[in-house]
Length: 123
Image 1 (cartoon, rainbow, N blue to C red):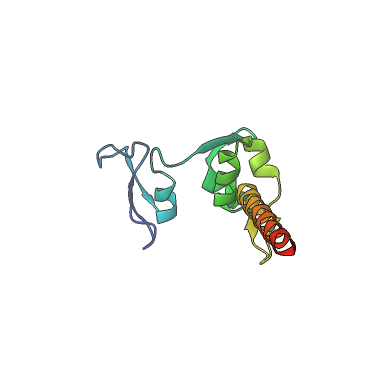
Image 2 (cartoon, rainbow, N blue to C red):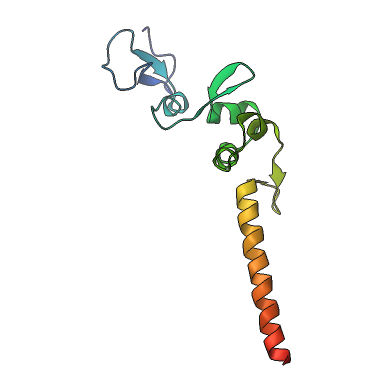
């Protein structure tokens, strides 16, 4: 395994995260690498002939990981979720399309309630 590369590295069980700490199943890894190695917690996407986790793709393509997760949850293809640019919210932050839709529906319901209350006052 060799000496520890830096103070940020610790022992990680890889490729079998549930296996023993033995030669061939351990490596030095950062916390970020270890987080991406959790079995059953990461979605692996095949995009442009490469397989990477959502977090890795988001980092490479300058997207927020939660935005990509929301897009996939909404039924988007991996291609579309990773290539469509993020829309910016009012504070200049990326907003997921699912969240935008949720707020627009809530805003629409609020306006309908307000109009109905004004109509009652006018009568």
